[in-house]
Image (cartoon, helix red, strand yellow):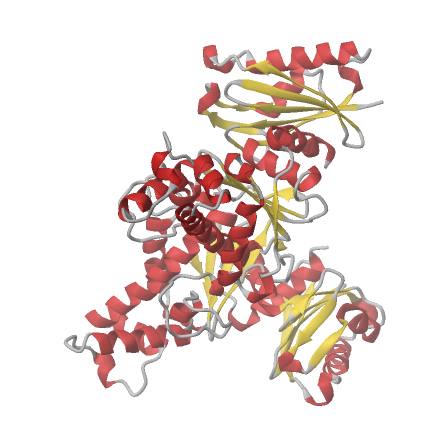
Length: 314
Length: 314
């Protein structure tokens, strides 16, 4: 039997998985990411760990059909990584170097956010859809566009940067990207908390359980909204209104079969997808109004699923 | 020598072309589109005309390597046309029927706007670019997304409907699509004229040669702007501002190598691309700020180039 090694390199841990040739996850584990010395140990550590786990199964590197790797940075078409600040990496041939460490096994590489999108399209919330846009509502608002099972990278590696669609012209605060009024400023975990605090401040007359919270986070907001707090529900409408309108613009460009909503904020559940869809329908071009909204399913495993898919899909 | 037949079916004329196997246009001509009787004569007329033009070269249908056809409506992956109101067509297997009329030659079909985008990417303003977004500023604002030489169709045939990205929440007038505030309402030929008239009305103190024009059209506006009319220039900035901001949203989704600007409005020349780019750069995500803006080159021939490319690209 031939195995696929799947690798998702994060700033703290490297997530690893072994898949069979049919795409079933057989085993998953993690190792620490050693970012010291320009991250030069990360790939050797990874290769050693894969070798050990194969040995536990009575197998060897020669039993690998291929490997896929997702990294937190841009990867060009030819497998060159172009700086991963969190890993200490500069520019080098990622696929070639990892392949050499894995006795010449073919290696496929991609950006980790795009990899997670591919994983969700393959075996997650988007399973059965040919094209999806993955929307990750976490520290930022990330996106990944998958069309006919292929990740859309873009001419400058910036396809799917939907968190930086400009939603307002009058935003005084600056986005992490340097612009003003980006979707991310209203719909990331941090953005949602910011919108909530601003709303409470601008409406001192409105009572809300949020006012007695130690810290107003996106999680607290959705928790109170689900308990029926009217003010919290109003804020959820505002936040999901930005998302619905932004995703309608996305649909006017790529018209996906489904939007898959993931990231920490999505843990609030159907209230997120249902409220986004409500505003999406108002802004979307008529032909795209039926686009599905589903929650991501794979959580932290999306990256290794996507990495496996990169290797299996060729 | 093998030929490729290229067909661009419009509501008034069918544009036809013969290409050689290297993609050189050898000859082009037009025939009237007979829309009566549900448009049932259109395909037989087209096949007859191709046969005649081949005969003039001492060739026959057996000398065709393939044919491509663009139509003003949605075409599914399997070559079924899904209503072309302007032609009187309903739903039928377009590629199969045309192929039968051409003695079994392989036929490839697509939407005409997408076909024009493919033509411009192949041999027009986007030549040499792997991915482009074609922006057609005509009666409406049309779009076509070409990625790695393939047209992006979308799950509901609505990819590239960039004219219906919502730009404003406060627009009282209704777009042809039924929504309010679509890019098309500000940047199509009609939308530009509307914006110009509104601006003159709201600023009665501003002098302008536009005030003595018989009818203020997009063409008149750009003509006066190029002559240095200050008010006309201000309106050009407004209109191109909408386009720049809208295309920045498009780039945050697909990150093309170039935007190719076509349609009647683009005949005003570099003032269009230069002014759009100025506002695009302000709204675009930093990685995509260098995206090229070029004018379309093929004019009315874009459709037959795209149709030829559909047949040659397989």
